[in-house]
Structure formats: C-alpha cells, structure tokens
Image 1 (cartoon, rainbow, N blue to C red):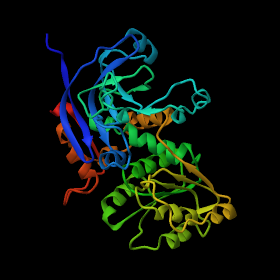
Image 2: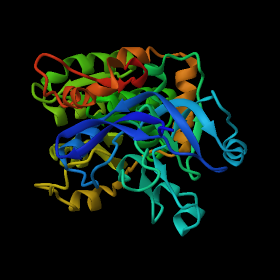
Image 3: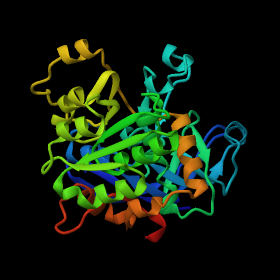
Length: 365
C-alpha cells in the first residue's frame, strides 16, 4: 500500500526552494497534524532564504501557521482544548517547559528553544515548517483558537499583530499619555501602530523612506498622528517639534538591516524613556553608537525576540473584533508553489510590485 504524502516547499540551499512530496507521519496521543490554511511571510523568511539566518538544510520554512486540526491525539486534544476541524494559530517557538526561564514564565527564552521552521527535514517526523499542506504539531506546541469566519489571509495576521502588541506595548509598558516613535513602516511597524492605539498612546509617530509612501499613508489611516519621510525631512528636528523638545517615551525599531535607526533611537527617546530593538541587522556592528547617551539619559534599552501568548491573544482579539481595517495591510496571496516569488516580492526584488503583508495559501494549489 503506498505511503500517503503531502506537498511541502523545501529549502535545499541559499535562495533555493523546491517542491517535494513528503510522507504524512502518524501521530501519537500527544501530537497532531495541522492542515495549513495560510502561512504568513515576513522579513525573517527572507533572511532564512538569503542565509543570514543560518538554518540547517534541507528544511521546510514557514513560522506563521494558521490552519485546521486534521488529526489529533486524545491527550493533545485535552491539553489544547481543541479537536478535529478547529481553526488554530500556532506559536512558532517550542520550549522545554522545565528549564529556569520556562519555569519563570519566559518560555520564549528557553535554553533549548527551537523554532518550527528551523528544524531540519531529517529530524523525524519531518513536517516541521508551514510552507506545506500539512504540518506536524509537537506536544509542546502552544495553539490559540481563531474565529473560523475570518478570511484566512486576515486571520493569519495574528503573528505580525502579536509582535506589535509585545514589542510596542508589553515590553515598554506603553499606556495612555505616552508618545511612541516607531522606526519602520512595514507590517510589524503598522501592527505596532494598531497595538499602541489600542493601548491608548497619546501620540504615535511612524518613520520610513520615500519609497514607503504607501505604508506611511496606511500608518496614518491606522491611527498614527505623524508619518515622517526621513529622506526628505529632518527626523530629529521633527521629533523635537512634535514632543516640544522632550523626546518620545518609547522608541521601537522594527526596521531591518539598516543600523542608523539604532543610533537615531538614542537621540529621539526622552530621558528615562525606553528603546525597544526588534529589527535584526544581519549581525552588523552599529557605527557611531555612543553608549554614554544611554547613561546620561538613563535610557532603558530592551531587545525583543519573538512573541508570547499574551501578545498573540491580544492580536487575535483585535482581529476578531473587526474594529480596524487590517485588511488594508494585506496585499498579496500566493500559492504554495509560489513561495520563492512571495519572499522575493516582500524583499522588493520584483520590479513595480510592493508587498506589505502577504501569505501562502496552500489550499489554492
């Protein structure tokens, strides 16, 4: 009897993805299979594709899975409170649950944490990432139920929106009266606008390049009070004007690769304020970084890696409330076999095409 198989896109080398038919594993009492409805595409997908993130290969990328439970063990169903047919969002990190960070509640800093999309294909049962029709759910997975009536392309925004809540609200403790500057108008920058507006921030400022005009316009629509083109405006002077010379309570850097926003953040933040660094820079050094500015202004600098359950829950509540036109952030749907095109479109490698939020829809073929 032939072994049942499912389609997955496998990264076999730098900038190389290929379709493969892979065996569908059997599950035990503690695990499950997820039928992927949508998988979001973000900057780290490009970094994995480019080799900046050194992941083992061959590997199935994809760390923003939304789908329906295809099969599930009895123990897993009890633990997660879900059953066959339920729609769930899956957290990307797998933690051990027992090391000191896990036991203290910081499971995203688990000493042996793993990310679904970085686990090699050679490690059984193989179907780890979500560039696939089916995905294996490990017993240590964290899943969240999602309203099945939401369009999959919108529901899968739980991931970038979750980042907005954790990075721009939870970590810096943003609240009513705060002025927040968000460096970078991509999907996570726009998500940060929505999260800060939900948190009651008084003033929200978003920055970007001249090429980001569409995104900056959308930032205003999402609730930003100011959108600054840093190539045609003096960023520091504009922030002085907006804050009456005081500076921002919170500065969040969600830009990718460029190191200038890191040094800018130290000038833009108010004394005693918080800078959150969430945009990765390809492990490049930061030129002209003056640590004395941190000392003299007593700035709190926080790193942000990933999203935790509270951020995801806030994001899912926002999506299910339908209070905001989040669908305006979604620009592209791609078929599973178009994964490489999806990544290259996000990276602005496709002439005359710009992606803000995009996703793979395996059900489209």
